[in-house]
Image (cartoon, rainbow, N blue to C red; front, side, top):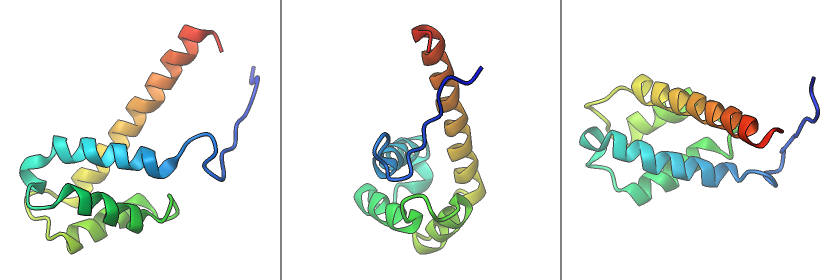
Length: 103
């Protein structure tokens, strides 16, 4: 039974840009050998710009990243898959949190 539905269209409950920034920092660490030539601060700034507050599809974000940052040792599809895998992990964590707190 659904007890509640939350819509966060304006980022009040979850700051999407901050979440993406946190994700980019982690992804940069996971793929540091392939991305070492990119300044992390510039990477975060540009990816947030490309993302347009979540309105740009992530495949286009990563394709642009690959082109603009001259990423050669990893494919944009690998980075996109990492994004998807981490998103699935986050959903699993939310489900576990829900069980723990009986929501």
